[in-house]
Image (cartoon, rainbow, N blue to C red; front, side, top):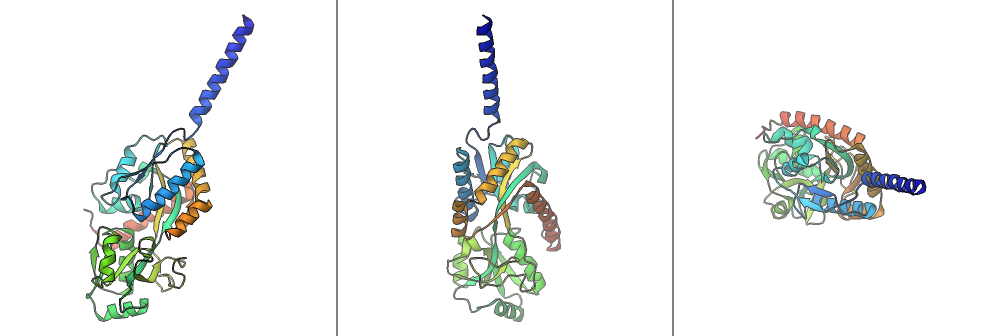
Length: 317
C-alpha cells in the first residue's frame, strides 16, 4: 500500500509540474493580431509578414484582424479593452499612440494603456511628384513654389498623419506656401499626382515606389535603399522628420513572462532572412528595437508631436 501510495503521489507531483509548465508556455493557442489599417495597406502587408514569421517560430497561428478607421484609433481602442494575457496584440505604426491623442478629442485610451513590445520596421516617407511633372529636382520644386506662393497643391493621407506632419514642418522651414489636400489613402493620391492635378505629395516610399511617380527628397537622416540617388531632407538642411515607427503593442497588464517571450521572438523574426526579404520587396526598412528602447523612442515622439501640432496650430476635433 505504501508503495502504491508513493507511486500515486509521485504521479500527482509529476502531473502538477507538467500542468504548471503547460500553463507557463506561451503561446499555447492562436494570438489575435489587430491591424488598425485596411487589408492591403502597406502596414497591413508588413504586419502579415511579421505575423507569419511569428507563427512559424512559435508553432501557433497569429491571425490578422483589420480594425481600421478614425486615424487607427478604433483598433487601439479595441486593444486597450482586450484581456491583458498576450493573446491579443496589435501591429501598428505610432500614429494612434503618439499622434491621435493630440488631434482627436474622442480618444478614450492614453499612452500608458499599452506596452510597446518591439519596433520591427520604419515606414519612411518621401516628397513625390508625378513622372510628367516639370520639376525634376527638389531645388526646382522649391524655386518654383517660392515664385508662385499659394499656387501649388500637395497631398497626404490626412491631417495629423505622419507624412502630413513631416511635410508641414518642412514647408514652414522652407518658406513655402501651398494648399494641402487630404485623401483617404495613397491609392487615391496616385492618379491626381500622375495627372499633375496635385503638384506634389508627401507619402510613404512603400506605397509609391514604382508607380509612376518621382521622388525628390526623402524624409530621413540616411538615404533609402529604394532610392540611393535621392537626397534626404537632412542633407538638404531640413528636419528629417520621424518615420512611421511600426511594431507590436500589447495591453497594459500583460504578464512580464509573456512580454519577454514576444520581445524575444520579435528579435528573432526581424533578423530572419524571410522577413527581411519581405520587407525589401515592400520597400520597408527593417529596424528592431526592444521594449525599453522602443518605449523611450515613442515617448519622445509623443512629446515632439504635441509640440509640433501646437506649432502648426492643428486643433483637436
